[in-house]
Length: 115
Length: 87
Image 1 (spheres, rainbow over the protein chains, first blue to last red):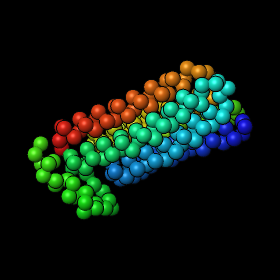
Image 2: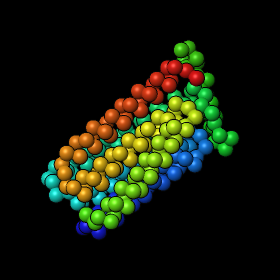
Image 3: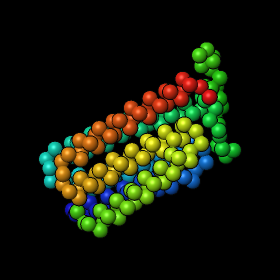
Image 4: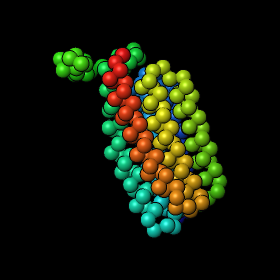
């Protein structure tokens, strides 16, 4: 049990480190957001699973599950909000970033131009 | 909980948090900074989990729930602010 928990915690921390490296290496907000949400969430889940295996407290697993659930629900929403805000305010795009036609359409949607 | 593994994990998380802070300082726009802050708070939550596993303390878990909630609230508020402020 102890070995499994240690492996899970180190793997989770490693994924968090990979996410942070991605935050440095990627070229625009949208690519960075990709690295900030997905690997970081998986790393958090692995770390929390490891912590849940070691903690002897009865209610611990419930609270850890609550954190995982919150992260699962809120991470996509937050990423969506930030991405939409960055795209609409004309955040600088890397030349390698591909903009899909539909995204262009959303940006010039008449309802947005009203404000 | 193996002490060596805990130390390695905490050091990795510290390095990750440092990289996030560098992005937070360097980041070109407000969106970059808020993404960096969000993942920084995620790393704080992971560190709290490791700390809870080391000490077996109950209090850290409540702090983790609150931190995870505040991360989302702050991020969505700043995203709204960016959008309303315009380019």
